[in-house]
Length: 215
Image (cartoon, rainbow, N blue to C red; front, side):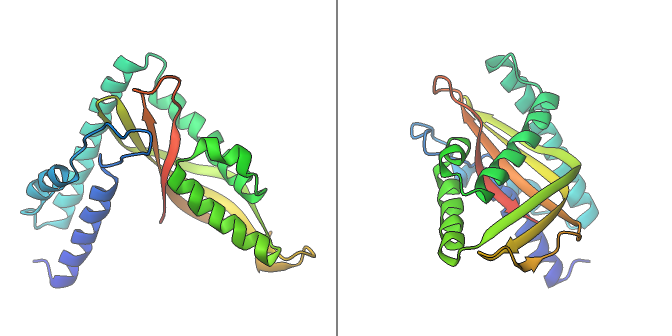
């Protein structure tokens, strides 16, 4: 039997899913009409009566599996060059590029790869580093796992949730190159969930990093 804590955890988990699942509305998709309320009602209705956490997890996994299959089919119809394998491989390079441009405080090359919302977050962090005359050095040693968690396509507005698990070192340095935080020799396993969005209604559109979630 589930206790109050279990319900809180499950509730939080569903809220996170709802926040990521199919309710993305990037700045260049003003004409889209994606109802957050309807999606919330649908998800809650499907899962609210499931009391067993294992069964709940399996139900959610099946939902995402179905979304990926349906989303891939829809994407293949509007983008003949799309494939899950190539997207996953390309996303690794985009992941490294975005982090690299951020570290170098290269706003010019960073901006075309991310949504306005993500750019503003990165830009504020860059400003803070510049103000303190600090630098951030991150080295991605290797990717342990890359998993596509969900695909949603509505009216040619596509979103893909992908989970990166990587081993990396992160070091924060002052203006003289002295280490303030971190260790070059300490390898840390980091899991990031990135949400990519592409609006196929816009000619020559590209995949943009729309949201980031660090677990």
